[in-house]
Length: 156
Image 1 (tube, rainbow, N blue to C red):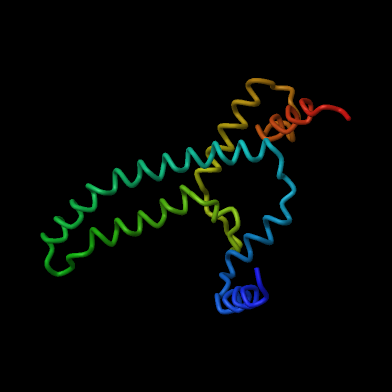
Image 2 (spheres, rainbow, N blue to C red; image 1 turned 180 degrees about the horizontal axis):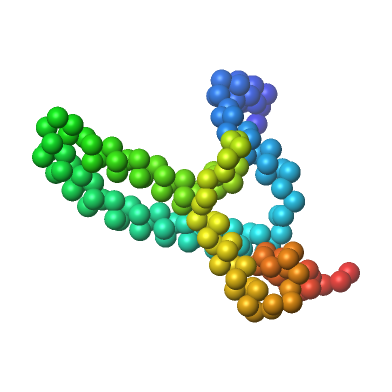
């Protein structure tokens, strides 16, 4: 790769505007301490559940959208009233599903509840019932996976 190619790429990078939200996510990602195997497995499983919830929501909203349009035809003074309500519900369900962990990194003071809160609650309940004497830091699955990975590494 020549100098000319490097200059072109750096010039293209300077022309592209960086998204402040993505910059914020990168800073948080660098500061995050939990980069172990357990965290990876946990986030992957939770992402799969979020994808399923998002797909189910999309499946349900498709016919409801047609119904909302038909309802709008019945009210000539404000034909988009039902569709507007559906869009509002869609935005709030997007925040609740939190598919790409955007709510975890919200810059606002007030964090909205997400499906992750439900997953965390279920995880705590299952772990507490499995071992009622476990310490609070051992309640998360990630700590168990990380501990198992440390124990399987060969001592050199």
